[in-house]
Image (cartoon, rainbow, N blue to C red):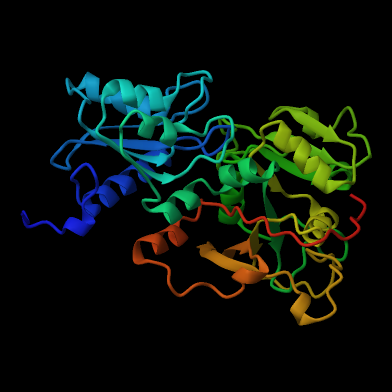
Length: 393
């Protein structure tokens, strides 16, 4: 008997696809309230009643705090709602392992939820298996609801877990003609206040920030994440120096800010895997033309943040050196993810493409296209061709 609903759009819990998508969008919004930095993913969870209405919600607030599913269950109970028979809509597959907290899959089973809908499966070999555990307990599980949006939200974390190295964002601040400094070496300030404030806000969202040892010596940066008033953000990223030259005892990098890590190597791939082993999920690189060129030549850049000022210098240091490109077909291709005006300056966010992705798909669904508007989401592509000899850092 047809009750008036489109049966093809109803899940095993009797809820319509539109209700589930609305709940997943809310779960994604909740997840974004959690910190972008740290070893754990940002996760949101919404509990729906049999009528499709939201009865509770929660999100992960950072390492050591309850996971999103546990937070949503606690929210339900605090409201006097029995979660038995509810539907859990979660941005990431519930974990199945004991960490600082118990397995989320077990918590959902014990709570008696009727079904679970997930955006993205968990690729972490330590935590995965929650969907199987739920199904074994007789709870229907679907994976892939608004999957594109879920992948966008978790882009840096998924990349790090899948590849063993951090997601790398390369920051460039240039003139219109691609210069990062004038002939006499001066570079402060090519961009304006709003662009610099935005760059500092990005610093406050990453796990680590890196420069080459040459930049550390010549520029003596502090690599802190500062607010517009000069105060420090609560989160200060790990400060990383790549290269064999030592960091002087009196360097600003040894002052107030995040901890300092010196990796005395020119092997960039090894350095990134070292950082991955330290649970650095997202690395921001601000280290001058030499380091930028080496990373780009090795195809280790996942995303570019190019701050472009309406200034012409005509001569001086360029943002990127020789990449060994002799013909246009060899160019490193990036896809524009976002363009933002910051005062007189413009920020271009571009993500590295695999060769097969050079032409964007025309079949992306309307709901998935909203992810392109999330300027804070970062790329997780890892299509790296053979390495070139890396330059001195």
